[in-house]
Image 1 (cartoon, rainbow, N blue to C red):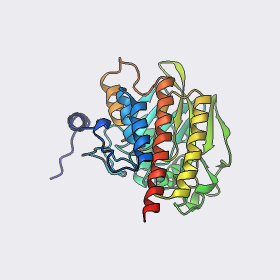
Image 2 (image 1 turned 90 degrees about the horizontal axis):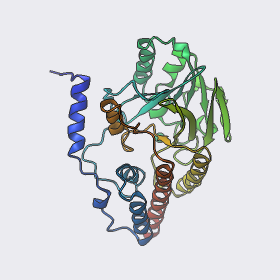
Image 3 (image 1 turned 45 degrees about the horizontal axis):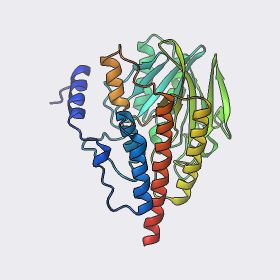
Image 4 (image 1 turned 135 degrees about the vertical axis):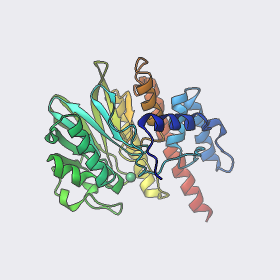
Length: 329
Ligand SMILES: [Zn+2]
């Protein structure tokens, strides 16, 4: 018999599971790496220092070169939904599961969604969330697709049909070896060929092509508010790394561009649509259970600079690891 746990039952189980999960970066195996990779992993450990959140970021960004201990890691398409609909900032709501999220950002002229969900069911669930919160579905004005993989566009047709929202995507996302956004959404309303601003009400979003994860990968910067104060959020467009040297070189260039724009715009709320590894889930739980504490999604500028440095050194280390393995063949 299938027993459906309550939202709080699911949360309690997960907290218990996380409490017994060993995640120390210091325990990560560094033996067996070529010197250039080992040196960069040591550099990553030094950047993380004794900051617990930066250790999570170190393990997240370095996952491909040095998989962190992860006795429990949800599948990308896991649909455990007890956190679905949790507000994380004044104007941002988490419409996601354990490992895949859509973020809804409120502007003075309606909602902007970052990504379209992994499946038609996730699209339907977002439509249901709109209904439950008493919003007209037409409140969704834009769906910004971070890239063409199915787990980011699988709900976009349902959402587009249900809301009439416009679609923004990078040109590489229309058709690439990585996939394509659904034909029914093409031509898209906004093709982002280079860095550009997208004005929605009084919010200026910055859209930045950052190919590497896929040809069509797009990163997004969004003004957000936390306890009434202005902050800037970023969404790094693509997470996974494949052992492909040209793609990794392209990704490394994109990382540098993303870091440059993040610093220019003074980003202090870095968010990711693959939400498991970067501590989003534990931070969501902290946000729910201890709303009186400082918002766990807001970093200091120094922390985000370290987070970006970790993304850079981990991507570079993986490129070196892939090149070394190819040369050894
Ligand atoms: Zn992807």
